[in-house]
Image (cartoon, rainbow, N blue to C red; front, side, top):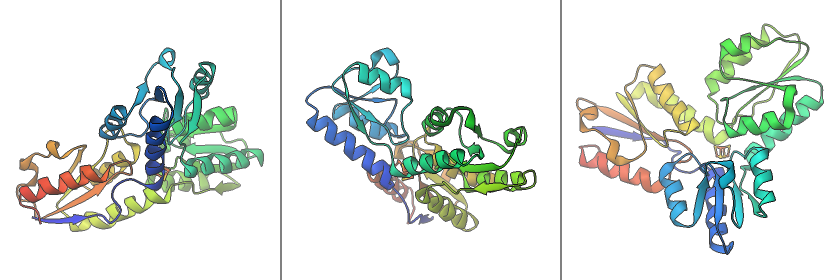
Length: 280
Ligand code: SF4
């Protein structure tokens, strides 16, 4: 079995930065350190951070300690207020790409555009954008949702940084036919689009696709969706232990890609397991 591995694997810059900040905070805070929910969407990394002293708060009443690390995609205001009220030091690990996307979207709204953001309802990046802009932004995830938006004037469109290029392209195309004045700001993260482009290029050359990354990771899930949409047998795993030998039977070429929150050590374990199963 031949294995083709994407060029861009492992942590993106924003995830690397967030993990470094959390580790450094745990080493220097001098007391309990918390994040709100997982710092990044990879359970194995979050477990390692827990061992290093970064705990995950799941309920607002549990937020307490010495330092509170804001995750890569931001944290809702009520939780930050709670952390401040408890006297915690706020350490901001929000990705600069997300901060920039929010800033340009805010400018779009200030210019009088009715803003439509293409993203996942409930994703922290979209929740914090909604807090920033309130009624001035409508979040849509699908073409159907976008079609139901009542257009009132000139429209500005942005995307969650980790959305799929294809979804962005389709919704923008639909809106272009409905709106007199449409301003499109491409706020997709380059670290994500390059992985999608590599996956897209790889799909015609492979018999099956292995996607490595957190099951709760939005950008990793997109890569798996791309494989399935093209009819390529696709397996989304978090760790090497999940690989079933039966998946590889009769496979001539296997493609391997990873999400932006997948650590190198997990990818290395996956490659070793694939070699044990006859890959080269
Ligand atoms: S994928 Fe992009 S937006 Fe998300 S953390 Fe990485 S660099 Fe930041």
